[in-house]
Amino acid sequence: MSLSKILAREEMAGERRRLRDRGESLVFTNGCFDLIHPGHVRYLQEASDLGDRLVVAVNGDATVARLKGPGRPLTPLAERMELLAALTSVDYVVAFEEETPFEIIEEIVPDVLVKGGDWTPDRIVGRERVEREGGKVLSLPYAPGYSTSGIIERIVERVDPKSP
Picture 1 (cartoon, rainbow, N blue to C red):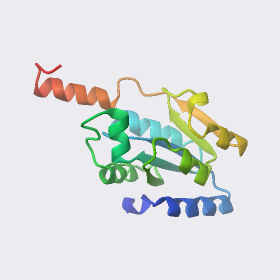
Picture 2 (cartoon, one colour):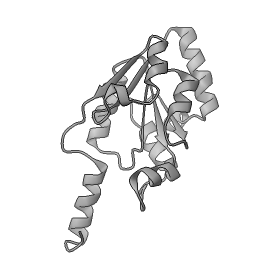
Picture 3 (tube, rainbow, N blue to C red):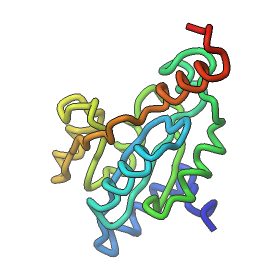
């Protein structure tokens, strides 16, 4: 069942130790994932292909509101996590409430740290620690034409064409 992929931070830290003991690599990415779209699915599959297991850290609702503005997220944290856990490319889903994923990256120290194309590797939070431990930090290109903000804008335009 996909809900078993949703772990508390402490559980994820324990799972990370088990993966190391088995010699399996862990890929880490994070984001809001407010409305899951094909760009997300493609990005997560590409990230998953970089190692044995993929963990997706998801911003909590309050953090999404601070990052994306009022009215966001549209989808509550528990539902965003459930949707991500249903994807075959995703092995683990964990929430974080801080402004950045720095603390959780420090806790689990993945072998590969990945962000989307709008993040250059030198700007990726946690890069120094992952590289110091011998890991890789990558910025993967976005699938053109997909964004949550773009989807929201199209919905607003179609529902109320007079809206800005």
